[in-house]
Amino acid sequence: MTRTGFTGASIDRADNLRLDEGRVAELAAHEGALLMQLEGLDPVLDAEGRLTWSPLNGAAERIFLGLQGEVPLFAPLIRTEPGQRAWSVFGLLARMAAEDAALWGGAKSLIEWHNRHLFCGVCGTATAVYRAGWGRRCGNCGADHFPRVDPVVIMLAEYDGKVLLARQPQYPPRRYSALAGFIEPGESVEEAVAREIMEEAGIGVRNVRYVASQPWPFPGQLMMACVAEALSDAIVLDTTELEHGFWASRDEVRAALAGERDAPFLAPPPFAIAYTLLRWWVDEGRAGAAHASSKGMRFSSDQGSSEPDAL
Picture 1 (cartoon, rainbow, N blue to C red):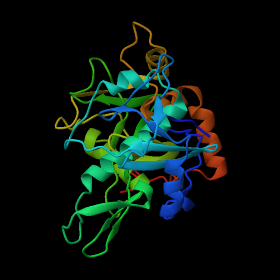
Picture 2: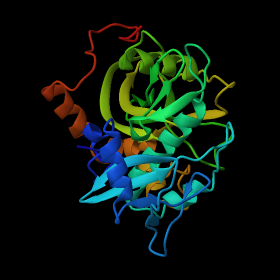
Picture 3: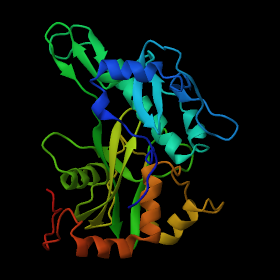
Picture 4: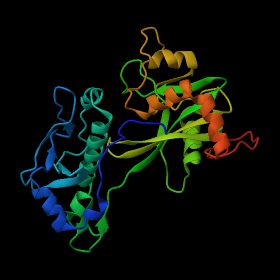
């Protein structure tokens, strides 16, 4: 299994306890109960780059994250401003252990979900927290609301031993990444891959293959990484979203992942699934594609069409 960023939280999520208010109250009163320390929404780290925790001490608004052994873990349910985003957190993530990033990422996504669902989407009445922080309930119409993740495809289009990379204007200088986009209602993963590549780069694709997935807490996506076979290398870039794109060889991608000074572009950070996808393509792509084909992991088969399979 391909390991991605924001995964690997070694806790028991204890979903079976979330509706038991008495049991959750006991866990909160446990002398060993811990509360994740946050500065705004950013993690507070110790000298070793690990998450810091404090005794819960009856914090009123909290989310029950789960059990680490016998220790109940909680996160504070704080109020945030709409659209608040601190880019400084990316520097912290580079120092964090994988399991800590996963715990923090889950907590952050939940906190932001709560702040976007303070009112009922059915009747407009204020909602209240329930299920130990894993839901909100409307006291007027009784509607229950649960945390959601937004599905996103992120993909490499491959042509003649190269992959298509592009950059958005807000990226750091020289950074390039894979194309990505939200899956739309009524659309499959492979259809979304084909549509996004066509919309953003004007390139048809076929033979969409799944590689890995990753939760992405900015604010709450599930990224599904794929590779597709491009039918052409003629890029027609959507300049409303992207400012430049190019085809990168394996050697060029390998140099960027290694951080070489003369690499033609700056790679995504290691905690991003775009980095994982590029690493997979460089190190395991050909063998992985053959394995996926033989094991039935391919989303769609190449039927010899001159059009993208998903369109």
